[in-house]
Length: 74
Length: 347
Image (cartoon, rainbow over the protein chains, first blue to last red):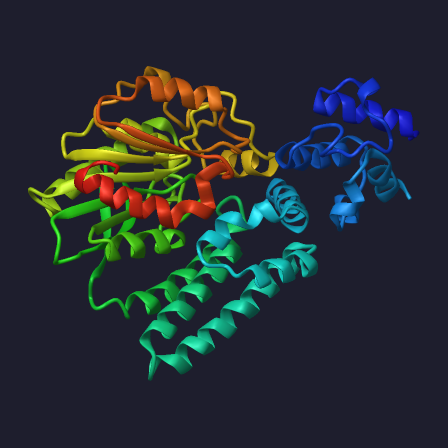
């Protein structure tokens, strides 16, 4: 999966236009996702991309779309 | 009854949330879990086995501390037994639906909680109330120095034992207390009674009859948080109830709950579309003291504003700017304000 496709997934799950989501945007401060939305985003993104949620061990792993992508696909 | 694969998935999601979001632990911290335990748990727990091993080991340690304190300091013994009970509660809670393991850990929690209850000067009795062919189970703590009774309506997904700190505080504030596992909760769920609006209303009918006959002529108040807060508003219709305290009532029709939580609720309900009353359809019969956290991400401010506009005379409300759902870190203050309001209204 490419970074662009990954951002499309995030966009669909969070109802935020993909144009507003940069790889290095902070989920919290730039994209405006609160902790509850983040829980649901992480669960859905791991389901939709068939990746292992136990790879996400630390808040740094989901600070930005790029960090999350790297954590799930590295 | 064995654990289902759906439950396993829900547990994985729950543990992921627990590992990553400190806010997950707020409700347990409010009930006495220490922050150091939370931090340690967030680092050490990755899977169900880790969860059970971690909290069982904690429970055993607290039990040993309680036993060693019981000969000398009763307060320490009580505190440690309740900490142990809370840790066993976490072990049973992690299983979203009824299974043998949930029953096993529930019984450990219940045994430990009873050891603590034995230190309460014979003020506590365990009670069962019948509603048709179903039963609900709860705790009554009699305060002989008072004519005031506080019924605590617990939120979905909790047990009566979990809310011991509420019960104990209201007792110290001069109330007798009544706290039950309703349909879908604790022992009542384990005995097969699931949650629906219909089953909860049946439960409330019998609960109010029991309170009226157990505490004749006394002033009865309701205290609820989250879903319990919404049911408390509906239950103001019972003649026996004098006033209602409602903390963060779950009134938004499109409540955005964490995914794992929705799955947990599905596991304890008869009909997932009908688990809560619709507040806009309720006539609110008694004065309500309403608390809400402005940072609540589950309940919308505009819904709270609409509710406030419909509250009857003599109602009061307080919005905490820095609190989230359930105003977890103001609950001591909220219970104290509530006790005063029950006497004379908010100052």
